[in-house]
Every structure is written in C-alpha cells, then in structure tokens.
Length: 197
Length: 137
Image (tube, rainbow over all chains, first blue to last red; front, side, top):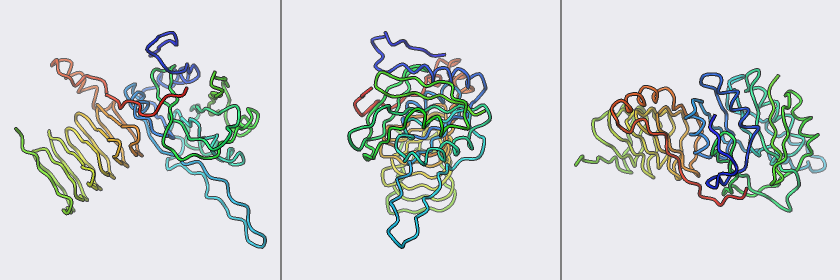
C-alpha cells in the first residue's frame, strides 16, 4: 500500500484511514472496478488506474427537491435516480459528498442504486458534513495523494443547498449495507465506509 | 521536421480515416480513426464521433467514442470525452468533462516492461494535472 504520513511536510491533505483500508481490500483482487461519481479529479482517477483498477467516471447530478404541487394540480413525480451502469459491476463506489446535496427523502433511493451497481461484498465510500452550512455550498473535488491521504478542493460547481443529515438518518438510508466505520474528521466531515452484504 | 496535417473547421468526414502522419482535427469526423504510430489532436473546434486508435491522443474539443492509445491520452481542461480509454498514460485535467472508464493496465504492463528494458520513458507513471482551486481541507 502506498502511504504518506500526516507528519510529512510535503503532504497538505487530510488523513483518510477508511479509504486506505477499503483500497487495501479491493486491490487484493486483480483489476478491481471502481465507480467515481465525480466531480472529476483526474489525479484521483489516474492514481487508482495506475494501481491496476479499471476506473469508471460517471458525473452524477444529485436530484433537486421537487416543488410542492399547486392546489388542484397533480404532484410531479421526480425522475428516478439511475446510474448508466450495469448491475453488480463495481467493487467500490466513490460517492464523495453527493449525499449532502440531495433531499434527505431521496437518500434511500440513492443508496439502493449504489447497491444495484455494487458486487456482493463491494464497498461504498462517502463523506458527509456534520453541521449545516449557512447558505448554498459547492460540491468539492477529492484529490487522492496516497491511499490514506486526500485533499478536499473547491470546484466551480454551481452552489446548491446542502443538507446535514444525522448519522442515524444516513445509517437508515444505508440499510442494505453493513457500515464498517463512521469517522469524524477535523474539518467536521464524517467519513462513511460500508460494504454490500 | 514532420509535417502537421489539419482537417479544418468546415470539413466533415464520414467513414474510416487512416494515415501515417500526425493529424489535427478542427472539423467533424464520424466513423473510425486509425493513426498507427502517430499523434491525433482534436482541436477546440473538433467534434469526433468515432473510435480512435493512435500513438498519442489529445482532446481539446469533443469526442464521443472509445480511445486506444499506444502511449498517452490527454483530455484538456476544455475537452469533453464520452467513451472508454485504454492507454498506458492518461491525463485528465481538472475541469475536463469525462464520462467513461480508464484502463491503464492492459497496455502498460507490456509497454512498461519494454520501455524499462530499452531504457526509454514508456515506464514513466502517468502524469496528472495540477490542482487549480484552492485547497480548503
């Protein structure tokens, strides 16, 4: 496993132990399949591909809230959350911060769609902010410097509402997974690792 | 010095395009592109709907199709690519639009071994684009 330590002055990232443990597991298999839901970070994709993974990038746009129907009008059915990927293909889905940018009632559907594309025993890795932001926020990009070191970067993505679901709510949404760890980072991000049982 | 050939912005080609020299495409190509041992640049105005095989491929414009490169594929910040990439070296600039898969393993083992044996640079790791936005972790 490629490791850098937080004490290394050349490293400006944050430690990311859960992801390191997941990568150690999936790279025991030859040519694991990884799905990255974006925003795209070229360095992260090539880092994993150089390690031997086949990395698929599918930029995912989290669903917006559905406006309430006007009196007398039928409710609008939101389009389903669907990745353009086959069933049971991936060993790891990197969902980064997507969960924070969709209405909480869509979280179970999002989790089910990730379950669909994961192989049995496949892994999900995501971040979620602990506290709500004061206003709209931009989705961040994650740059993987080493298996256990990551940098959270600003992007040009349009600002959107950011929800702060409780750990219990997220655990409920991930009911088809076995949650292996929830770690709180110093920047108030929670790091979730879970695998499909 | 090798001559550079351009397919201009007003040119549209449908069918199979093959050649033995470097090529820059600013127009539209639908079909297949095969440039053995040569480089293809899809310019900022280029729109390609084709599977591509070349030595090096640089995407500054738009590509829909799969790319196989013997050396390197680079998608620039302004580039847009939808398809799968197989190449020993891949550069995806931050800000590029990309949907598809990256496989650096199929070719590189053979190429890297050969490159190391010959003392060439084929065994070099893939380069990556630098961060543009400020870190805030």
